[in-house]
Amino acid sequence: MVLAPVPLLALAQFVLLVPLLTLITGCYSFTGSNLPGHIKSLGVPTFENSTLEPGVEQEATSTITDQFISDGRLRIASPSASDARLIGKLSGYENKVNNYDGDQPRDYIVVVTLSVQMRDQVKNQDLWREDKMVATAVYDPGEGETEEEARATALQTLASDIVGRTLEQW
Image (cartoon, rainbow, N blue to C red; front, side, top):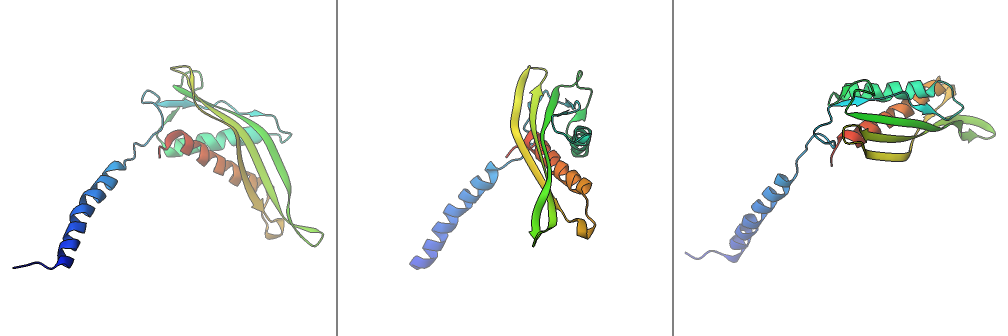
């Protein structure tokens, strides 16, 4: 019995494709953390505030700490007793008109800028540093939205980015 060339070609493709797919899917793995194994706890001292917006440093610190607590992979500890420390400084806060309808403001944008440093306190070295993290949120007072809600949204975005940068390995 003689096999036709088309089935042989299909068989050859299958034989080559299966190991390739196995190799590709076998290479992907998620380790769950970007941190060295000895880091189990994190201290988050109150961020420094070099903006003119009072209290934003407390809100930023709380939002970021809460995001780490929700994630659950690091235990929150006092900064002096933790394996790692997250040091932050709010360097910019703006609340400005985003769009106009004619000569009237339609909506506004809150822009929050901060610098962050993740420090390994066991080995006394930086794990990562970002000098300018920026998040924005738009709000429309005509729709009942407030600057405070937009600020909270921008800070939540920054918190998610910081937790991701700290813990996710891709």
